[in-house]
Length: 290
Ligand SMILES: C[S@@+](CC[C@H](N)C(=O)[O-])C[C@H]1O[C@@H](n2cnc3c(N)ncnc32)[C@H](O)[C@@H]1O
Image 1 (tube, helix red, strand yellow):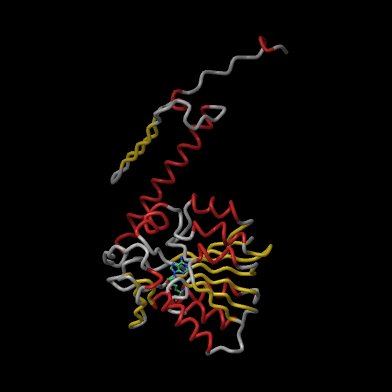
Image 2 (spheres, helix red, strand yellow; image 1 turned 120 degrees about the horizontal axis):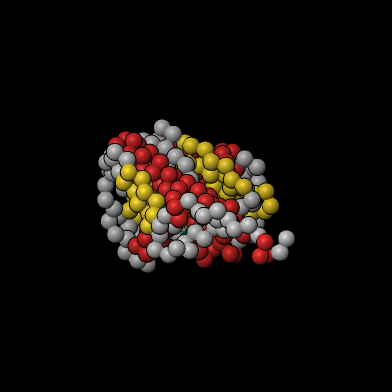
C-alpha cells in the first residue's frame, strides 16, 4: 500500500485534545493548563490524555492523603537561620539527648528506632561501612553493635569529631576511622565500601534551600558520591525526610544511581512538640543497592 492509500485516522476525541485537565472535588479544585499545544507530545492524543490524567489524579490523591494525615503532625517550631561558614568551628552542645550546633536542633534521641533500623540495613553485610555525620553517635553505636569489618565516619564539626574520636577510643577492638571535614571534601579521598550511611545536616541557608526545600530528598546531592564509593551489590541508606512513601522524583533519582531499592517504614516515632525538623510519627528507610 502506498502512502497515498493509508487510511486517514479517525478524528481525535475533543477530550483528548483539551488544553487543560481539571478536577473539581468538594474540598479542592485542581486545574492544569497547557500553555503549549505540543506539551507532553505523545504520538497519539489519547496517550497524552491518559498520562496527564494519571499525573493529575496522583496529585489529587496526594492532596487527599495530606488532608487526612496533616492534623496528626506535632506542632513543631520554627528554626533560626544558620550563619554561613561557621559550622566546622561552632560549639556543639549535647544536652538531654539532643545535639545543638549553630542554634539548630541537629539531632534528637527520638530518632533512636530510625537510627537502629538504618544501621541494621547498612551493616547487614558486616563489611566496610562509611557513615556521614556522627551527631549523637546513635547510629554509629548501632552499626558497631551489628559487627562490621571497618567503620569510617566523616564529621564536619570539630567538637563533634572530638566526641567521635573519644567514642572510638572506647572500642579498641573495632577498626574505626574518624575523617574530620565535610563529606563534600572528604569522600573523594576514601575508597570503596560495602555499606554507606548518610545522615548529615544543612550547614548554611543555601544548603537548607537546596537540600531541604528544592531537592527530592535531603540526601540527593550525596547520591552520586554514595554510588561512586560502593562496591557492586553494596547498600546505601540515608535520612530520607519522607514520611510514608517516596515521591516519583525521589525514586527516579535513586534509579539514576542504583540498580534497585526497597522502602520500609519506621513507625511510632515521637518527635517533641517543639521539633524544628520533623513533625510526623514515621519515616521511610531506603535500602538502595549499587
Ligand atoms: C543528624 S546528625 C547525625 C546523627 C547520627 N546519625 C546519630 O545517630 O546520632 C548530623 C551530623 O552531621 C554533621 N554534618 C553536617 N554537615 C556535614 C557535612 N557536610 N559533612 C560531614 N558531616 C556533616 C553534623 O555536624 C552532625 O554531627
